[in-house]
Every structure is written in C-alpha cells, then in structure tokens.
Image (tube, rainbow, N blue to C red; front, side, top):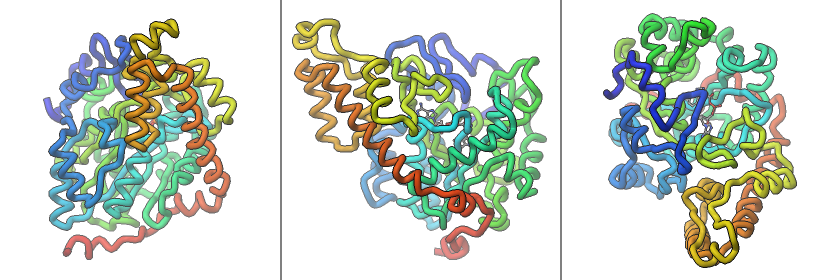
Length: 409
Ligand code: TYM
C-alpha cells in the first residue's frame, strides 16, 4: 500500500480500532493494536537495528521514549540518516492544534522527542499551531482559536526550545505574513482530489468546505520553501515527530511531494498516552477527566489519578498479593513508562507490582508524585514566558544556521 493515496474509506477505521487526527478509540482493553496499525497505514516498525543505527549517528543513547518503544513506527528514517551521514542538512517540523487553553501531559510526548532530536542533531525546527483547524473542527471562533494558539505556544516554549533555532507560527496569523505559505498550500491543493481526501480522512458531504482544503495547510510546512526567510529557495528534507494519529496528513504530503519537486517527509510516530480511564481512548483535551493538564494543581492531579486512573490491580488485597497486578493495562504504570526515565527504578516498580508486592494505591502515589513534579516544574518555567518572548519565537526571521556550510561538509 505504501504512500499511494487510498480512495477506500475502510482505511480510516477497522473493526476494533479507530485512529485518525480527530478520534482515537479501541475496543480492546490494552488499546490500539499498533502492529495492525503499521500494516494498515503502511509505515515501518522501529526495530533494534534502526535503534542501533540512530544511536550511532546520534553519538549517544536514544531518548527513553524511543528506547522504550513508545515511538514505535517511522517512515524513511533510514533515508534521513543516510543524508545526515553524508553531511546534508535537514529540519524538524511538528505542531499542535490549540483546542484548549492548556495542553495535557500527553501532548508533551512528541515535543520532548522533538527537543531531543533538535539538540542531538543541531537542526532548525518549525512548529505549526493549527488554529484554523480547530476553528473548523470545534465550536470555537477564529478569535478564540487564535488566542489558544498563543497560550499553547507559551507552553511549548516553556519546554525549553532554543529561540535561535526555533520558529513557531500560527496559521491564522502566518498566512497573512508570508505569501510563500499560501502559494505552497495552493500547489498542494491542486494535486489532491476530493475523492482522495475522503479516502484518507473520511470526510463526508455534510462537512464544511474548510475541512476539505485544510490538510494542505498541515502539509505545506513539510516543504522548506514555505519558510523563505529561514531556508531561502533551498529544498531541504524534513523529519516530523508526532503521534501516529497525524499520519494521514503526511501520507497525503508524501504522495504529493515528488510531484512538486520536494523530498518525501520522514516521520517518527509515537503511540498514545492513554486516557486516565484506560487505553481504549487516548488522553484528550476535549474530555476534562481523561487528562492531566499542564495547569492542574497538585491537588487536582492527586484527585484525578486516585479517582480516574484505571488500575491493573486485583479486586481484593489477597488476590493482588497472590496474583499480582497487570502493568499492561494499569494507567499509573503506563504513565511512569512515559515520564519516569530512571530505567532501574521503573523495572523494580514493574516487578514489585507484577508480583503483588506493590499495591495499586502505592503505584498511584508514585505516579501522582512523578506528575506533580513534572507539572509544577513546567508551571515555574511557563511563568517566565512573557508576550515579548512569544513574539520573538513567532517573528519570521533567519535562524541560527548556515546551510551552505552544512551542505558542503
Ligand atoms: P494535537 O494538538 O491533537 O496534538 C499535538 C501533538 O500531540 C500528539 N498527541 C499525543 N501524543 C501522545 N499521546 C496523546 N494522548 C496525544 N494526543 C495528541 C499529536 O499526535 C501531535 O503530535 N493537527 C495537529 C497539529 C499539527 C501537527 C503538525 C502535529 C500541525 N502540524 C505536524 C504534528 C506534526 C493537532 O491537532 O495536534
């Protein structure tokens, strides 16, 4: 199947799992079947040999989110590493659809790995805020979405991105500042038919027309000429880290790229941080109780996890001590897999819980403390992100790179 644009709506859903940019659900307690999804989407598994290669090129151990298989799938990462080894430049592209004032901890996942990649390979990064997408899909006005884009961008900045190497833009604002963006959108829209977007995204006749054209706006930043003030006319390859729900956009982009003279974007796909209620859905900003938000107080985090975090423990203390808990479905344990980077500590928790030595309440307490510390550290950094700093990140400008030099290395 590869990247060929499907005109078969069955590719959008299957019997047990629905994975698209707007909905992630599974009928199975252990969540989405990622092996099946890789086959359905036509991407590739990140296997041991690719991990080793990535470590060799990076010159250091890969980030735990990659090492632990949370980033599990890719497209063309080998090709990108070949180029990197040949001394060619590339850039990173990722994004956020601002649908709530605050992001949740699941949203941090692609940004954590993006930051690791940027620091490791010392490459420029562009971050798209799709306030247009959220206006079209949610009950939000243009003004509300634009405001959320700015608030969410501050959360992203608070993660510690380097202003000299990072450009953040919100579509509803950037479209008016840079005509190259709209020109590339039109080039892309000219290559994709209504039938094809119906097949990729499942659009139906009653969808507003803005939705049908929108995918081109998420595709355009994968082409370097969308940012003439950074890249001039140079055509650079791009690597896009995201959760796999965003893949439909980039399947379309990869199909169009060669026809417009651009390399196909490479992708690194993450699995989903589960909803607190369990892996049948992903943590989502649209469901307040499913998520721990970056604005939550320590008390809210404690209450949410104690009340809602699905437990893999046994119904009675005796059974738990005898049979042990199931870490595969336990949300508090999954939370630690995503956010506790001390491998030895994580493994000892896994063993103790599986043997019934550690109780569900005790595991929840560790998860609560881990998240409280991540969220409060984030809030401390977020306090210092002023409007002025935000403007610096969002100003179209040269980034701190000399691409000609990199190319001729
Ligand atoms: P959005 O705002 O839904 O999500 C932002 C990023 O977070 C990922 N994500 C998750 N990752 C792990 N666990 C979860 N529970 C979870 N929920 C969301 C998403 O895959 C995404 O990477 N249309 C996009 C915004 C966008 C974009 C991009 C994303 C524009 N350009 C390029 C990635 C790459 C959106 O609404 O993302």
